[in-house]
Image 1 (spheres, helix red, strand yellow):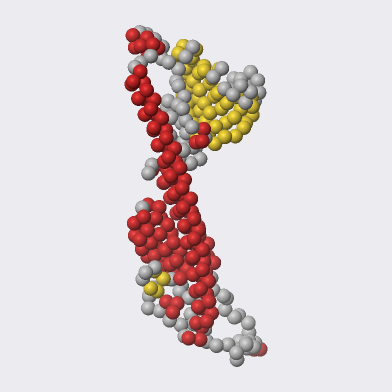
Image 2 (image 1 turned 180 degrees about the vertical axis):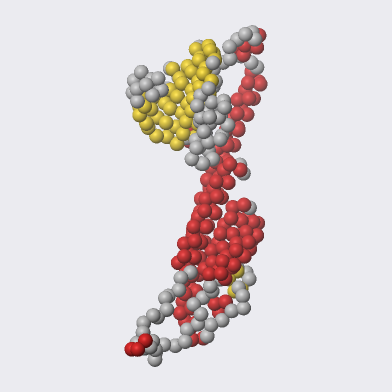
Length: 309
């Protein structure tokens, strides 16, 4: 599995699990305020329902106990889920952390401490059991969401790996074709004459399915264009980190490519800008020092470089 593919996806799993844990911890960590009413002459006000109430058990494990259970549960879940790989470890750690934070128990280890939520008097077990059942249901729902997310991640990784294998097969086929037929006349002339100018850069053949496509409008002069352009933008972001590795622009009227932007070193910043005329490279600007601005300017004509500054 390509590291650039599963790492951002696993990070999303961890962020989602931690957010769910914080939400549940905030929802279950509070306690009802004490009765502050007073009767005549400062004495406590009588409770009209005091004769019908029955003794209640503890409200549940405290915040400290939940935090301790969450940490230990996360470790247990990471060990158990690690048998299924990095994503399984992240899913197991997150689910066990959430379970420990809600119930005060460590998965596969029983309740924390000597008392736990099961040490209260029998009179309060009805409400406590109902609360535990509700929490268990929430945990099951969260686990189901985690399973669905893991399934989506696995499907996306398989799709990305298949695309990469397809690109590798195409490169191997082209290399085999060149090796079988030998160099062409243009390659031989360039090898024979060391003074020949470098050839214009060639675009790699990439399946359209890997690009995201939309339509944009380019104002006159924005790309040294003589008229306003309606172009189709095709963006390639293979690792889905929000920073495309390559963006191609095609004129909607002619269907020819007019501009290409490339992140050559995959650092998240575009460092190559290529202009086209009638579908052929006419100029290219490069950022060689990584400051985000071009510092090399190249001109091309007839498929070869004419100047470089």
